[in-house]
Image (cartoon, rainbow, N blue to C red; front, side):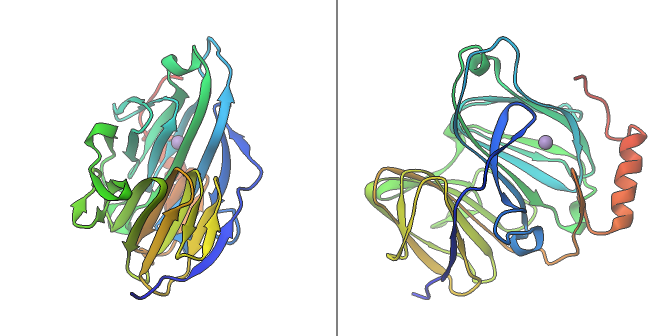
Length: 290
Ligand code: MN
C-alpha cells in the first residue's frame, strides 16, 4: 500500500446564488487554491448543499446561457432539475440521476427546478462540475448523456456500496463515457462502512462529503459539506464512515494543456476565446427560447 497523502480538508465557502435556483458553495476554481490548472481536468465545482426551497408556481433556475470547450455534469442528490439545450438535448433528472452534457463546440442551455419539485418545494441538494475537454475534442459535436440512477453500476464494499458514475472501480466500468480518464464515484456507506480506492499519483483527486462524516486514511475526519484534497503523491486511500454517509469521489488525469477561460468558455488560447464570443454573437450556438 502506497498511501495517497492528504493535502487539506477544505470548509465550504459562503454560498452564492446561480440564477435564483442554485445556492452553491464554490470549491473550484475559487476555493482554497483549487484553480483550473491545479484541479485539471475538473475546472469548476459548485456544490448546492442541502437547502430548502419553498413551494412556488414559477420555476427557479438559470436562464439561457452558452458553454463551449468542456462538459457540465450535474449530480442530483435531492430534488429534480430540468434542462434544455440548443442541440435538442434535455430532460429531467431526479434524485440519484446524473446529467452529463458535452458542450464541446457550443450549446445554449437553461437549467431549472423541475415542475414536480418547484410546485411542492423541498430540500434541494446538487453538485455541478465542469470537466475540461482535451484540445482535440473542444470543437467536437455537442452531446448529452442522461444517466438514470438505475443505470449506474454499483460495487458492494464492506457495509455499503460504490456507484460508478464514470471511470472504474474494482474492474466495474462507469455509466458515462468520457473524453479523458475521469473517475467519478459515489460511496454510500452505512456507519462503520469502509472502502479502499486506488488512483495514479498524478491524477488530481478530491472527495466531497455529501452526507454524514468519514475518516480518511484512518487519520483525518471530514465532516458534511467539506472537501478533502489529496496531494499528487501515493495512490491508495481508505474511507471509513463514522455515521451513515454519502461521499463523492473525483479523480482525473490532468490534461496538461494551456487553459484560457472567460465566463462560460474554456479553451486553450485567448484567440479561441475571442472566436467563442464572435460565434456566440453571430448565433452559431443555435437558438433556445427563454
Ligand atoms: Mn450552464
